[in-house]
Image 1 (cartoon, rainbow, N blue to C red):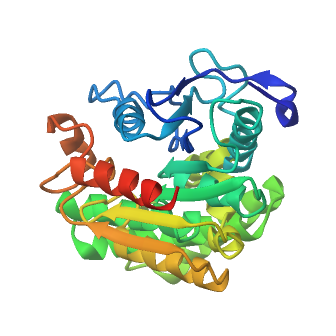
Image 2: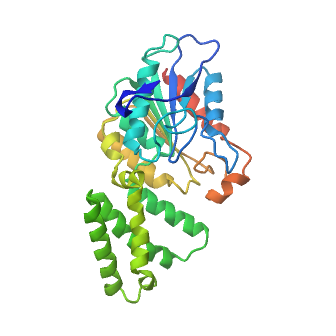
Image 3: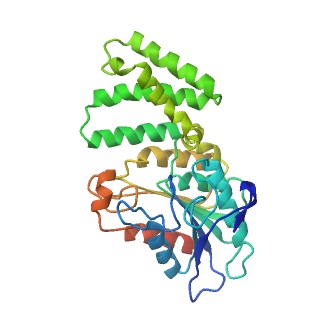
Length: 327
């Protein structure tokens, strides 16, 4: 299917249909950050979460469309220059494609987004009345800067880095993210970040990180501006979209998720949907699951590869039952 909003690029995927259900509800799977194929294949840990999720849901009577991200595998386009808003337009083109088919129910097209996909789903659902439901799996409920800062804090805590060091580093990222969040002109951003970091060094001579604030270090930090995606992610507040999302929503996070921390982000999702006066919201933290919805000990990224489970069955069952109870 093609995306006319992205110079007509063609996206390629797989549609799985349940054998014994006529015109079933259908879910579009939306991947998290980074280039991923339709199976959301993570080569480093040899898991295919979207293949497992699609297979499970289809066996429970729900059709599933999963596709290669733009610029990945068989899909056209440039992944590196795209932002969450660009990926949202790819999802919209998937919705429009499904509406042309006669073997699914066009009134029961939903979105299932993981991680960044859990941000993209409400971006689409907030304005597209063809979206019948949204499932947010480890989706952000806080702005991108907060998600990145809490992600860093949790990963450093697991590595045993002292709290004081984490706190000091966060002061610098708060400066950098704050400037990016409130400005779009690259030269203004560079000037402000340089000025504020140098002022921090002068005003905080006893800080353990002041000695490392050099011209070389500042230039290294300014490298963040080379990523169009990161800058856009820092600026996006999910509540802007959640507050306009009125279709049924299921939001799940694992208690061991250190990348999109459960309590912080589920609270944000709840707040946004409350503003939308959404009447059908289910929000739940799944005990012991990590960012990939595997049963985990610590939730650390390094642990992913050591876990044999690709997708926890409790999570799979909860997702399919929630959809089938409504459609």
